Image 1 (cartoon, rainbow, N blue to C red):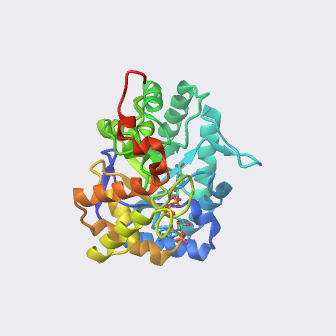
Image 2 (cartoon, rainbow, N blue to C red):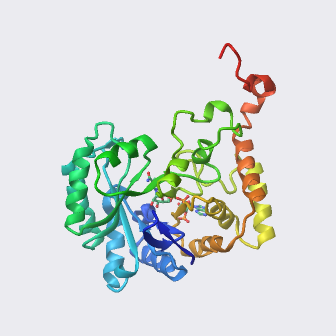
Image 3 (cartoon, rainbow, N blue to C red):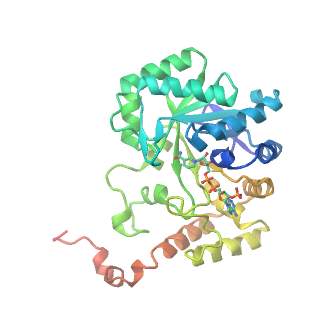
Length: 331
Ligand SMILES: NC(=O)c1ccc[n+]([C@@H]2O[C@H](COP(=O)([O-])OP(=O)(O)OC[C@H]3O[C@@H](n4cnc5c(N)ncnc54)[C@H](OP(=O)(O)O)[C@@H]3O)[C@@H](O)[C@H]2O)c1
């Protein structure tokens, strides 16, 4: 599998395995999918303390334990700060104490004495960045974490952290798929989506990360909405699926491979996190790394995704009146 340097410093396979769903399968199945990933050349594995309330990390730790030669050949990442309560509500805790204790717990479950990357899972509006800096300094000095990153953070939140941190954040992990395109929508200033969906407030994280040599990791690369399901074969995406299926046929690969090739085609060198727990599916998805996709093909899939999502809006008066998209003196 092709390799690249995450954040310009950490050599990794272009695809990474997301381990969130490993809490749901048996140890044997998890072992099979992890070894298939290794056989396919995947060297990067993503975790978080909240996945299965720690069970995904535990399962991975057991697999690592069975083959002690693996750890030095792979990169292991985990995340902290997201807290799921009894009601499944998510809150955040970026205090020094929480970061340090979460890291210890993840290391223990994963059965390793260091993480290659450790990240803040989501922004905490009550963050005291000085505290994050102290926690990161300690973890780095103790040799427990090599590099740091964030997830679901916006440019200004990253800037705030960078003002205090002594380490560079090398990754921002964000939701991105051909059926969930907010990331590229926000980088467009010309209308491809309805104007209301374009973030004109400086939230263009895609451009920001390119300027600052941060890598974006794409979570849920096959899903639409917020855990809406897989877009492939979904009747809400007829135009996108038709185009994906046609390209798959033309290129002799599966629709899944086309969905991932679309992410890889972006020059920002986004790293997709593949979440399947099915070894055969994973092997098939890895063929994406050999797919060549032209600019025209990339834009065609993007346009088809927008067309499917705007289907309902197209019946509204706003979309029937082209002038309604133009700025007027009144607005
Ligand atoms: N930072 C964050 O906030 C955040 C949030 C969510 C996820 N993540 C990370 O992103 C990783 C990937 O997320 P994800 O699991 O939602 O991503 P995904 O790869 O888009 O989805 C995988 C799921 O889709 C199913 N699926 C059904 N048909 C499929 C097909 N044709 N091709 C591929 N998958 C198909 C898989 O089932 P089978 O297992 O049966 O194949 C599996 O349940 C996670 O493991 C985690 O590491 C991060």
